[in-house]
Image (cartoon, rainbow, N blue to C red; front, side, top):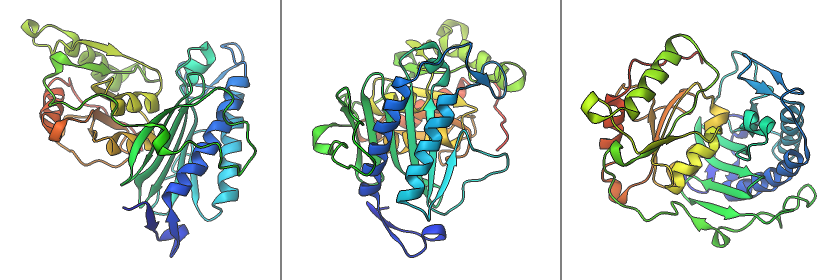
Amino acid sequence: MSARSTTGGAGQGEDIDLVLLRDHLVSIALRAGRMITSARPSTSSSGTKKNSADLVTETDQAVEAFISSELRTLYPGFSFMGEETYQPGQTLGPEPTFVVDPIDGTTNFVHRFPYVSVSLGFAVDRVPSVGVVYNPFTGRLYTGVKGKGSFVFDVPAGAGAAGAGDLTAPPRPEQGTKLPTKELTALGGLDGCVVAVEFGSDRSGRNWKTKTDTWARLGRSKDDGGAMVHSARALGSAALNLCGVAEGVLDAYWEGGCWAWDVCAGWVILTEAGGLIVDGNPSGNFDIPVTHRKYLAVKAAKDGVGQKELVKEFWSHIEGDMVYEH
């Protein structure tokens, strides 16, 4: 797909300027970030969805309402899928769709751990095509457009104060750093990798056992049948984990239980940086939909050397498999 996309569905016959759409998303993300940093959530004021590990705040809901309103004004014919307004059974269709997590890392937000992001994705024909991920606490902004590359920016404090529709705020690609930020090399084995893993909200049953058994094997010494990875990290935000892999500061990210809004934006940023996203189960499937809910992301490599080998090695250490409803 080029930076302009002719679509069917809700945008039938419409030529979408994906670069302009990215700029709109950046402008919205910066303003949403101001809402987030101005809020003062706490563990006592937050609510839960699935269980006590699955938090939601009034700020999540207010930020999504703001984002949805802005996007419906700018692109009234496009669909919207957001974490806080998702209804069971809702599916991602082929029509142009914004796929949004207003606060990715709500638990971090509640605990004031500064790894929180606004994650704004856009999909056409169910394919992630534009992604914007912004951490308003660190000022780190990531953008990606299918076929145009991905970039990272350090946004100055106070960005996003401009009014609606003001496109002077979004930085230009030439002001940022093209991803990945680390020099590309051939990839070696897991024993040289830093891997991102997360608990998620499922804390019992089959998926939890698969995760905990696999984590143990990833860290275990090779003498005991493990991978002996360098170390594991958990940023608490799927979008920021994917961006870390896109930068090259994380070597891989393994996840189960995420939804499309958690990964759509980061998917574009990672794949435009040369990374891979494949099945998080050891199925041999290198081609998965954004709605798959089980993911393994691997960073870019020089000429792609070692990427698929690393995936296969990772799959060989997965104990069991994960099953999630869609």
